[in-house]
Length: 400
Image (spheres, rainbow, N blue to C red):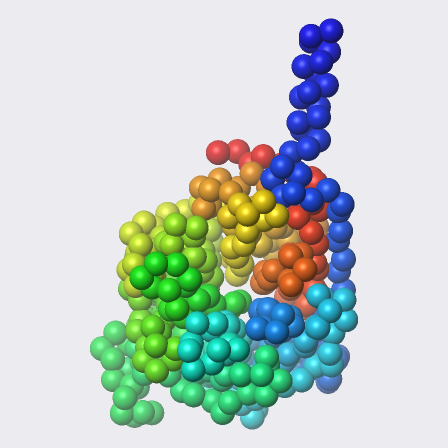
């Protein structure tokens, strides 16, 4: 009888484990397309980013590519809004236009700690370019950095503000006398995906925008690429650039504030040789980097990813991570959870088996987890949302 009781207790514990972790037991999952090729005469949509506005609306951004799926060309930043936790969405509207040139890499963040804007202010960072990334690496074009803001939850937007000379060390004084940096950064990309505002300790209030650049002429295996970030401690009045990540070929990055106040960047490795995500940790709010390593628990193709922090139903700090979890190609969109600041990732759930690429995570007002992600490079952008119980229902313990 004792052995039977022990067996029953073990089965009960295993069954209840998802609830103990997240405090929920009824599973929910839903997905719908948001940006499909052909909508509003766009031939392609790529590069998703999503935030929850101060009024708790969801704002889903993407690049609307007019002529096709190529990165460079006539590209707008477009937006759809949901006021009912992802059930229904507004029509597509354009929030960024650069004529027949590109404006892209939408990187939104909500500033909730500026006394001048007690109801919050949204920043939407972006890049503009005059040539393809290939040509800009060769010094044949210019990439710039800017932002627009909204104080009414994304309904209207300010004029563009160019911060290139503060966020990007360009050496093209013929284009602008302020662009005279000996570092000779050429390409530049904000995130893409959401940026963050730090909320803990001495750096609380800092807006931190992950980014990457290329330094000087093209090198083998994209070794001139470096991830870094730029940030402001005075709500956009002045800007500083973080130290670059000291690892060649570090590229698109996304950031999160850990439960102990440190900043983590989770980074794409451009040459694809490691096929694992690069991690960088900072103890000074992302100004410098104390530890940079490859996380073998996070397999990846050469692709962007997303990371996000929140508190589960029991108040436990949780990190969420999304990416195509394949070392072969962009496929198998997967969401993982960590309960120890990313040291281990014991929970993972596959969202889509087929082609999958860029993604961005958000927490809805109803505490469901939202994932805005691409069905491959040209399969459109979908929005999935699910609760914590669904995420842990197919729990898999990853190997350490």
